[in-house]
Length: 142
Image (tube, rainbow, N blue to C red; front, top):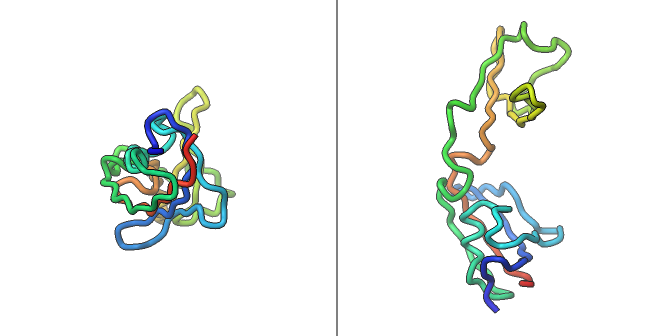
């Protein structure tokens, strides 16, 4: 049985950057379960599984456009420290939530730079701008 759009699939995977650094893996956890073609995962991961058979293993190379897209400089923001809460000990790499509008929408951001007078945060997905490599094993198809 080959996996096709609309099927609920379960996969084990290891996600790597092109330099071999692992950024995520299902090792030691339950397989990832989702419906093919539903938009629940990045496009390249979805299309990489389509056509696989149960028990099949393969490596899928996903270009930026089919992963998290290019990094967008419009999603990098600078703030004056004087405009921020003084009780937060900001650190590079720190994850924060930023309110995007008056309607309560919250966007996760990462602190990327700290100066004497301000901080820079990035609202891009941490893997934006990266080509990705996934080792995938199709566990089941329903």
